[in-house]
Length: 156
Image (cartoon, helix red, strand yellow):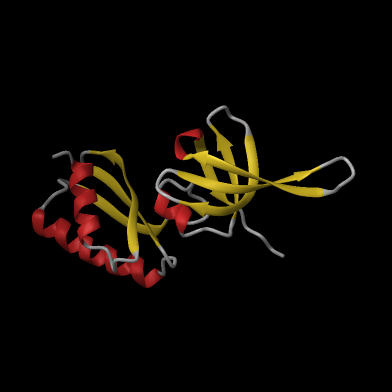
C-alpha cells in the first residue's frame, strides 16, 4: 500500500466523530523532510478541537507504526473557504450557501446551492439583465461538469 493510502486509512479510522469526514491528504517535500497536510470537514463544520483531536490520534499512530521515515510535519486543518469543494458530502453540508463554480468548459457561474446528492447539484443561478432586474434560473449540474466550486463569503 502506498504512503498516501496508508495515511488516508489511518486518518479515516481516527476521525473525531461520524459527522466528520476526510477531504484529502496532501504529502509535500521529499523522503527526509515531509509535510503531511490532512484536510478535515464535517456535516456541521470543524472546530479547532476537532483538528487537535485528529492530529493527536494520527500523530500517535504515525509514531507507533513508524510509517514516515525521517523528519516530517503533520498539519491537520479544516477544508475551509480557501479550499474548493471536492466531495458530494461537502456540497450537501453547504446547501443554502452561494457558490462560484467553474465548469469543465471554463465558463463560470454563481448561484445558491439548492440541493446536492451523490451524482449532481442543483443551483439557482442569479441572472442580472441590463435593466438591473435579477432572475433565478435553476440548473442541475453533474459533478463531472464541475471543474472547481468555491463557497462565497457574504457580508450582508
